[in-house]
Image (cartoon, rainbow, N blue to C red; front, side, top):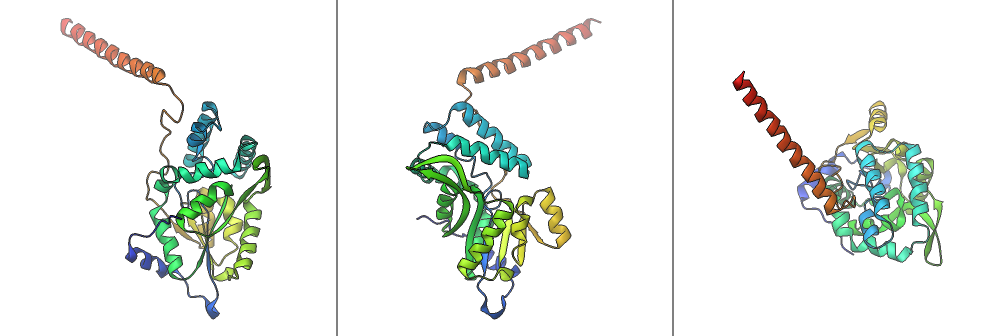
Amino acid sequence: MSTVTRTDTGKVHSMTEHFSTPSDNARVAAFFDLDKTIIATSSAYAFGREFMHNGLITHTEALQLSLAKASYMLAGHSSEHMDATRDQLAAMVAGWSVQKVHDIAVETMHTVVTPTIYAEARDLIAAHREKGHEVVIISASASVLVRPIAEELGIEHVVATELAEEDGRFTGEILFYCKGAAKAEALERTAQQLGVDKDASYAYSDSATDIPMLEQVGHPVAVNPDRLLKKHAADNGWETRTFKDPVPLFTPPSAREFGIGSAVLAGIAALIVGGVLLARQRNKSRQISDCRA
């Protein structure tokens, strides 16, 4: 198992300054949302190109995932949008081999996800470990994608959306959707299983849909918060953090991701060049006309 390690010990120690000292030696946990909190991407959409290259989805479906990812990274997802995405993705994976999806996630981790891990999140996770805190990823994304990311970060405890399986393949049904009130209840169950004190524990998220989860702990932290969470955090005196490394949050999909052929690109280039040349010719003619006037 590979582990992302901290690179600056001073940073790790400085991050512990905001940690409170639990009373009666209570056990403490840090619960981290995943997308746009630990990683600067969407884990649900991140592997779209790899799924296409492995024959699981078509170019058109890969394009749809790229556009959905762009929408999510630029504007975020409302609760209704999350539900629609859940249904779309669950239907899409019906019939897929569970092992194949897991293998794709593991094999492409270092090119797809690792470069998007926030340095600030990595250091914060290390800081919690230094304090002896349990670290948990709690995400609305499917566990088959979340667990390899958790392993990459050296995080043992994972709570995520669970997809139904039969004979080694996804059925398209959802057993547990880790969102909203269900996510808050999952945090409470996990805290009990780990024997940690919720009032002494921490939770980190970027989305207003996670407010019920954040309210479960004594130290909620809004990370790169959306508009609604930012307001809620300010109204309730919650800590807010901004993670910037890596930047930007979203890199526009490449032509390859969109499945655009070289002929189309050549055509676009020709139109651009033609437009520039035409504009130059018109400008030159106008200058000659002005001189004659």
